[in-house]
Amino acid sequence: MKKIEAIIQPFKLEDVKEALKAIGVDGMTITEVRGHGRQKGHKEVYRGQEYQVDLLPKVKLELIVDSARVEEILQTICKAARSGKIGDGKIFVLPVEEAIRIRNDDRGEAAL
Amino acid sequence: MAQAPPTLEQKVEALQSAVASAQTSGDNAWMLASCALVLLMTGPGLALFYGGLVRRKNVLGTMMHSFILMALATVIWAVVGYSLSFGEGNPFVGGFQYLFLNGVGMQPNADYAATIPQLTFMAFQMMFAIITPALISGAYAERIKFNAMLVYTALWLFIVYFPMAHMVWGKGGLLNAFLGGKIPCFDFAGGTVVHITSGVSALVAALYLKPRKGYQEEPMRPHSLVLSFIGACLLWFGWFGFNAGSALGAGGLAASAFVATHFGAAAASVGWLLAEWLRTGKPSVLGGISGCVAGLVAITPASGFVKPMPALLIGFAAGIFCYFMVAIVKMKLGYDDSLDAFGVHGAGGTLGAILTGVFATNAVNNALKDSAGNPLPLGLVDGNAAQIANQAIGAGIAIVLGAVGSFVCLKIADLVCGLRASAEHEVDGLDLSMHGEEGYNLEA
Image 1: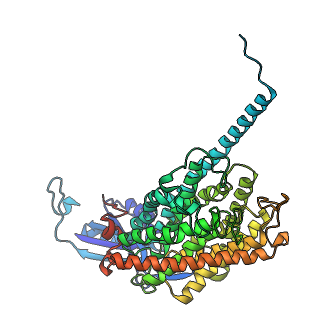
Image 2: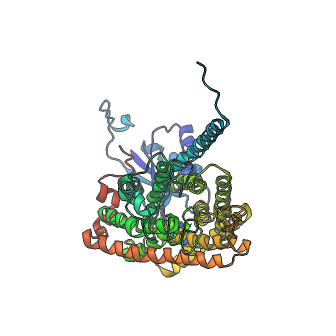
């Protein structure tokens, strides 16, 4: 099992969800986060006072998936989330030791 | 036995009484509605406007600064404030004839408003005594202790507001153009009494308290311009009561002030947005709503004296001037008037007071008459250039009283309980440290 963490542009969330649904991935957790990589922030002006806003709103998707499907899912997310501009985000893949379905104690891939 | 038919005299008497009663009904209806409109300006209008401009951790504390005055200023006003403002005293402050509202009832007070109960007049003026100190809270926002704020504000009403209200509007007041003042100053709805005093007092408070921790180093963006937007629009709405209500009746003068008020707000919104757009490249919502408030401030003293076209001019000038004060002058001088109480109310109020001397005309307001009953010229447009000097003296007195009075009140409050919240409390936010609660418990 692997955990896929994808940090994407908020406006790409619907596209990514649709694309994942189309290949049969239907479990995910989504968080609204703020952060930045190489993308520079933007300037806001309130009554003449300028503020540099560095931490930009992003959406983080977390999926735990069967190791065999990781590559396919990564390609799907990349394709759906890409606008080609700086700030499109990043994806990380991590190993997962165990998964448990709380309702009935299912373990491992059966719990996904 | 059949009753004798009424004589002509009896008929006329009955008719006169019916006419007076009808006028009282009409005027009093508008004035009671105006009282409620002016109260709405403080809560929720000003509370939302200021509350949205602070950081999330201070939203309740900031709203409380407005709300508590709806309570505290009312009590002080009822007990002694109305008397000190509108009782007969010396040219500087009223006496104690209306202490505990003694003698203030359903009968009109002909000196101030002959067609409405004095209770209505008292209530209308009370709403001004509530909002004026609340305006100052923009300067000390996010860093004053709540108990110090109460002491400061209560003292301020006695030292600044009641004397200023008496001087401009009270019978025999030094600046009262209509009731025997030595220096006739035109202030229809509170340019000097409300906006200059509060704006200048705010500047002194900002300087005395020093900037917020982290000012100019860390971001202090408004946490919700949505709240501020709603608040500003409620201020605009309530201001019809503030200015048109200051006609103290429901006649033509109220209509004239209503239109002037609206035109001032609209033109100032355009002026501020235009200045901002040209300077920074973007017209902001905060700019638009700040402009409307600046215009409402500047048209306040003029609203019952000027025609509609000068109202547009006054508003437009105020929008540009206040933008300049807030966005450029404040940055250069570096004081932390957190929500720009001085840049909007002090600067806009002063501009409005002076321009009232330019555009006031007896074609709008003919209350000032010579001994033969002919209306006297009012401002420069009527050929009375000297009025500009009178207006400047009135503004000058308000500036000095506001500055010195505010300093004295700050000093006393500081000695009594310490003005500024501890660094820890300031970092935690006033909501938690002063009131033990938070504005947004989204997980609850």
